[in-house]
Length: 301
Image (cartoon, rainbow, N blue to C red; front, side):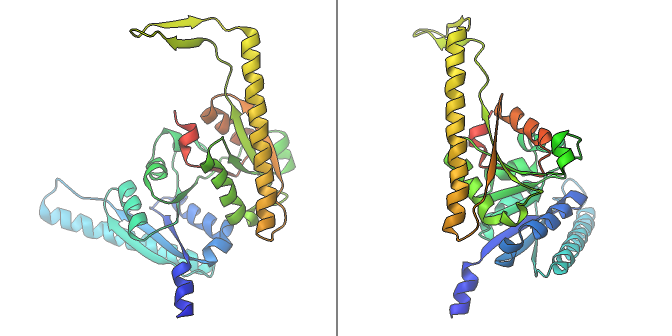
């Protein structure tokens, strides 16, 4: 009975795959970098089968059977990859639109961590511009980890030192600091001398004009920026950012101590600009190998 209770308490992790090289890279990345989490979790590997419509019934049946064979082949390959790491994985496939099928599977199997690859345009832009991963970030009822295959970029000092940091982007929201604690709990083995922890926060750019609505109608007045006012605003943004980054560093130190772990030290980084653009620029500038974000409430357009 006690053993059954332990099994029930295990976290459920699901990796969603398709036929792309990227999704299997995401699976291997998970096995390599979330070793402790996976060892203490039930691992599910999921793939969706496309819906076949607007064809003759006999053709639909043939296509669906072919899709099923492809899906089972992908899952067998994934099971073998897991076995190479000493992990026994459960495989699941469903018919449907991939992004919806993934989110439905998360609810059906009570998944607590969803991992998936992200196709497309560079390191993180696709996450913001729309994709299966973007849909899951906003609709899956669990923590979502999106893995991309980062491009090799020559970035001066970062590249020369060989550092490939893990970067957590934070803002003043609770969810971004939850993301930071998640990293400390689950990615500690990935943080080392060659992969130090960076905590990033963007400061809003200076306002070029001041806009306000009149009490009647939709009239707006645009006032030219006052340099003193702009400087004061930027100074306040800098103070707020510095305070939040110091809080994040304290979280790293204190959270490690609570878990009887070595203190996690972090480098804090900030830049001025639109948050989405600044985060992407920081990823390239610092040669980041892993970017972690909280739920994107603080970075909504």
